[in-house]
Length: 415
Ligand code: CTP
View (cartoon, protein in one colour):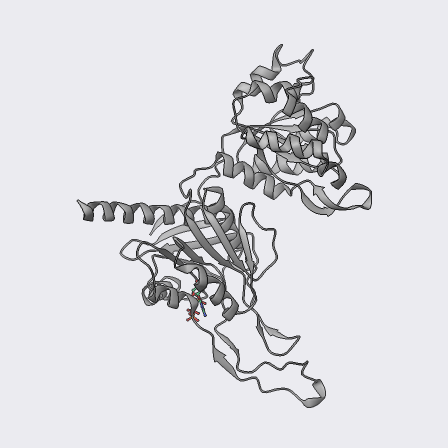
């Protein structure tokens, strides 16, 4: 077997300017900075004067890649900081972006270091607004955002939720995860642009009665990571999920619970889909009959008779349209490669991702995974223990390879 590491993030080695403006959500910029640095980016932090009322420069300096810059004048590092920082950037992220910062950027009103940097750069810009709902919905802000979008600025829309002062509504800064995902999308490879992808995630729940279910330990994290990675590379992703994790940005979510619901959601879309990744842990058995009320203890322990669920992946493999790439997962506790190999053949797959769910830090509920990638007529490839997102990147890279090889075959056939 040829060992392989999880692939590096598209942010690795990139110079990212993180502009922090004066809103209560400024504290979240610290977490965004940490995640960008963890992904291998060099983070150049800039804070406006107002931002410093909310968080200290020392905190952000400690978690970025260099000390925070705040001054257009009397800058200790260079006499012309805005052109130097702006021209050297691969990406600028403004998070949080206040209504004032958005208005200034729209107008090119270059009164401070951040605004000067924004208009001195040719790098892509991501703006992450955060403000009260009334402000976010005000026509001036709506208009400014529309103009920035038209100019090609990437806007990471705020989320709905609890705001400062206890109010609830739209305007809360997008999660650090969503901001970093947007950065990956902007800087990442677009090798799946326009490709339609379905990913299933989580364990199905099969009802016994109106309150009880047969479930499994799948957390859905690996499926969500595959969906996020595919979307970051330009794919149009539908995530058919049984769990409620934060939805990766740009991904369409279809919530399901049972194997039958998952089958319906996938089969109704499968014919027009280029890639299907079955990362879900689908129950193999379900109760034959479901009580429409809660079974009572006083009636004694019930005899629950089980029947097999449909094998969704096998069905997709049997009816696979030409050119579609079908990927399965195999959760095994022994004979990993042999068992996964047999599933690969039996279900007519192009790739199977096998994980030894009994190994430490691997599989269900962990943030890390170690897998073996198996393809028909190819040597198995081992991906050593890595973050689930890095494993997802290796899976998507393999899918891109399979699609490229199929493309060459089709072209050669035509000649
Ligand atoms: N799968 C499916 N429908 C099922 C069961 C499994 O689509 N009813 C898919 C899973 O999503 C996964 C692959 O099949 O991609 C393998 O699942 P796994 O549970 O490992 O294998 P099984 O086919 O159930 O075989 P076994 O019980 O022998 O391990």
